[in-house]
Amino acid sequence: MQGSASSLLSARDLACRRGDRLLFRGLSFDLTGGEALHVTGANGTGKSTLIRALAGLTKPFAGDVRLHGEVALLDDRPALDPDLTLTRAIEFWDQIDRNGDPNCAAVSMLGLDSLLDIPVRYLSTGQKKRAALAVLMGSDSTIWLLDEPLSGLDTDAIAIVAERIANHVELGRIALIASHQPLAIEGLRTLAIEDFAPEPEPLA
Amino acid sequence: MIGTLLKRDLAKFFPFTGSGAALPVVFFVAVAMLFPFAVGPDANLLGRTGGGIVWIAALLAAILPLEKLVAQDIELGTFDQLKLRGIAEETMMAVRLAAHWLSFGPPLILATFPAAALLQLDNPTLHLLLIGLLAGTPGLAAIGLMIAALTASLRAGSALSGLMLIPLALPILIFGAGALAREDQASLGFVGAISLLLVAIAPFAAGAAIRAAREV
Image (cartoon, rainbow over all chains, first blue to last red; front, side):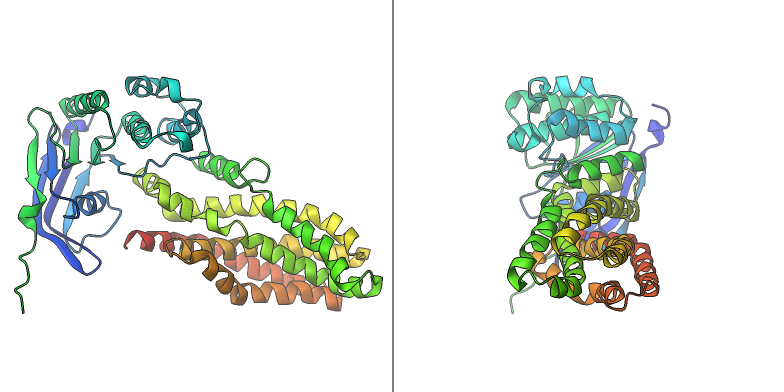
C-alpha cells in the first residue's frame, strides 16, 4: 500500500467530443487518495467518453488529465477470451498482473467458483461483468475507473461491488464511477456531467 | 510479460489448438489437390505452373485468418486493458506478428511437401519453393497484420482486406514465383529483403492503426 496516499487523478478544463459533437467542456475535478467520485448523467452525455479520456485511451479535445498511480478500467467489454474457460481467461490476466499468482479471493467473493470450468461465451452478461470485476480487483491498481459497474448485476452482486469500492477507497485509493444508478458508498462525491454540456445552439 | 502474450496469441491462432485455425493449411493443400484436376494430369504443364499455384495458394491462405487477427481483441477490449497495464501497442503487434507467422508459415512450408507431390514438381523447384516460402511468409504475415489492423474497425473490413493485399503482396509474389521460372536463387534474396522491411514496419503501422481505431 506504499505510495497509495500520493495517488492522484485530476482533470483541467476537459472537453471531449464524439464525432463532430461536443459532449462536455470545462470539466474539472481533483481526486486524491481516499476519494471517490460518482459521475452521473443520462445515456449519451459522455460518461464513457470521459472515462476513456481519463484512462489515456483517447485524447481529449481540450484540457488535460493528470494522474499518478496505476489505472484499472472496467467497461462493457470484459476482455476475456470467449473460447477459453473462465479459469483460463482469468489466468491470463493473473499472469500479466501478478506473475500467475491466482486471484482466488476476488473470484469466490463474486460467486464465480461454480462457473470456472465454463467457457466464457456461455456466461451471461452479469456473469461476465462479475468476472471482469474479479480481474479488476486482482490487478492491485490504485485508480479504478468504472464505467457502469452495476449494469447487469443482481442485487447481491451490487451490494458486494459497492462494498469493494468502499473498501478500495478506505485503503487510500481512488475510484471514479460513471453510472446512472445510485451508489450506496459513504463520502461519495457526485459530478453531474450535464452541468458541463455546451449551450444548445440557437435555432436558426 | 511478452512470453505470456505470445503464449495466449499462439493458443488462439495455432492450427489444431485454436478454433478453426487449421483452415489455412487445409485450404492450401486443397488448392494443390484440385489444380491437377482442373488443368489435367500433364506432368510437363503441372511442373511449369505448379510452383506459381503454390505461391498463390500460400498468399490466399495467409489472408484467411485476417478477420480474427485483430478485430476480435479490439471488440473484447483486450488491447485497451493491455495498454492500461503499460504495454505499448507496438509490442502487442510485434507479438501478434510472431504468433501469426508461426501459426501459418511453418505449417504451410511443411504442407508444401504433399502439395509438391500432388503437382508433380521436381526437386530443384521444390527446393526453390521451400526457400522462397521461408523467406516470403514473414512478409506475407506482416502485410496481413497491417491490413487486419487497418480494416479492424470497418464494417466491410474483410472484403477490403482482399483488395488491399493485392498491391502489397505483388513484390513478394513476383520475386518468389519468378525465381521458379528462371531457376534463380538470387531473386529469393529480394524476397527476404522485402520480407524483412515489411516485418520491421508492421508493428508500428499496426500499432498506429489500433490507436486510431479508438478515436471513432
